[in-house]
Image 1: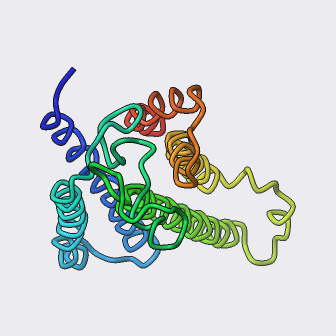
Image 2: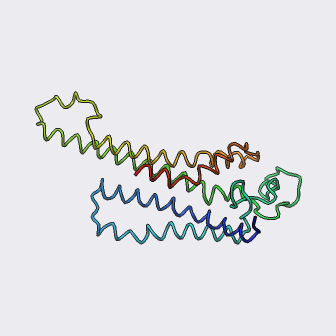
Image 3: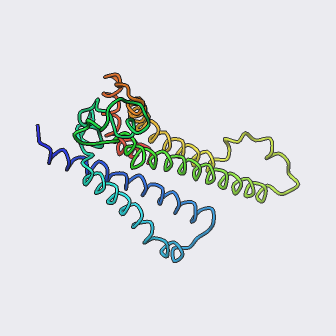
Amino acid sequence: IGNEQTCEAQGFIVQFSIAGILYMCCLQLQYLLTIKYGWKEKAVRRIEPYMHCIPILYGMCTATTALVKDLYNPANWDCWIAPLPGNCTSSYVIATGGSDLEMTDCVRGDNARFYRWGFFFGPLWASIVFCIAVMIALVRFVRQTERKSLEWTQGTGDESHKMRPIMEMKYTSQVFTQCIMYAGAFLVVWTFPTITRLIQLFGYDAPRILVVLAGCFIASQGFFNACTY
């Protein structure tokens, strides 16, 4: 149900949602600067405008560019960046000698598969890797801080604390568990959509069960985040 205009409206919103992923990076960066490097609120406020502007501008610019280039078309479980018709030959394939056609037969969404990765999935996985790296840095910092605290409270001459299992460091354990859950939420949500788009990137049709799983999990990010917190 709908038409080209409603499809474009949904596609615009879906593409703009990459801003939320970039906001996730900004939040992780704030955690890192505050917890590990001891930034005060005044210092954080100096970079706060950039933390708002960069995600919003990137989301708006890529969403608008895709709209102008007629990239929004039916894309399996929603309207987003996709070729129309789905099996059309892109101008990139023709330019690289992958087809005998002289010009693309895509009515809309020429080279859409590459725009998907440049506009969304590339930044998405770069953001996830960045957040995982920040989480590792935070866990290591909390672990080092807690070890020093234990050494101080038990005295430098007491070696018994070195025999304790690492799980006795409760703050490290708590931070580690939350980081695993937070990163796991993104991995669970975005693994199926990414595999689906990878299969399509190489010119194959994704299995229907994979498309169903992608469509189901991609809408559950907020639920998993709520479980984490």
